[in-house]
Image (cartoon, rainbow, N blue to C red; front, side, top):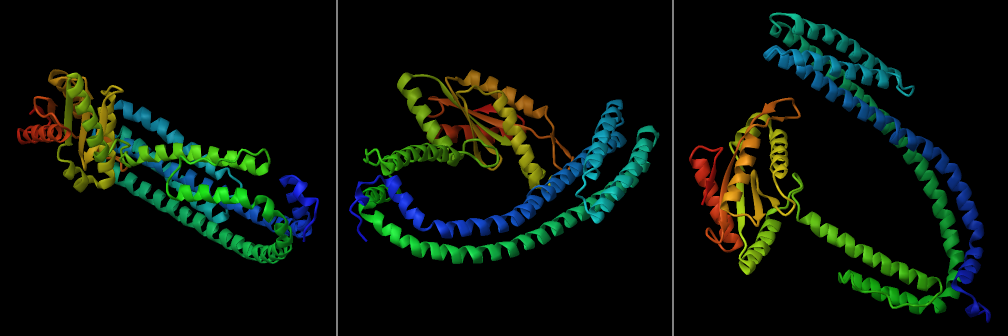
Length: 425
């Protein structure tokens, strides 16, 4: 079909004519979609909002109970008046969460029964806690309190199971609605596509060349050439799309730079990884050599870290590692670079820092870590120390690998001489 007036129309007008041909199927699709989507949206809201709220609130409740009972346990081991005051505050927090959850109208009877039972157990636990805080032999009541807390956690875990069962039931209902919806949509879309072929034929000549330019641009992108820009300067709709395409390319380049930054980071600690350490240290060594400026490197190792993993578990080890890295960064300047070298071994690049300055920083870090205590997710208190080796440019090495080797050697000496020490190469 060839209409003489058609090429003179704008792309917008051409598309409007073509879309008019498929208007009727689209209206039918919209009506069908509104009926099915209304039902699906209501069920989806229940899945997304109510069960997830219950999961999150119950998780908060469990964490608060663990935190509160740990205070009573600590008091039984080492009685301190401050622990009693803190226990009262945290216990009030537990009761507030119970009240919040039980006050929600969308709890089913089973869930409400489990939570109410857990609350009664908690009130009994408070009585036992009172015995612990007032008795001269608080450890006698500690086992009973632990059993109560275990029972509460068991009931809350049963509530979790009820939540997941509810989610599964609602998801099955949505899947059934979705199947019916897709069947109707496929039929109507198929009809619409058949009719749209006629309208598409009218558009081929006017958009073929610009589309080829888009194809060329996509080919460039597939070759990771994000600097390519479409040369379309027309003022019609395709010209506008070309400008949007170029803007998207610019954003992709920015995202690529961000991804490169993420690839240089350790996923657990957020520190730079070993590859980035070697790259940054190589650059700093070149700069120090060019301008004859001081440069130092610290290598740090958490003492007896394997014992932490063996005794408390790898999750506790991760918490210790994160705590130590946070403490290290407290003593660093914006220009300093802290990296995770591997396992529990960390490295710090100190530009414009001689051996004396590096030793001062290292001693501060060592003392801070030695004075700190990490609380594991299970409530255990873990105390660790670090050994630190120092290497200074150019005395101990004038290359990145040389400085790392020298600092690692000094670290080995610190560990051999008893750990929790700072040693220079």
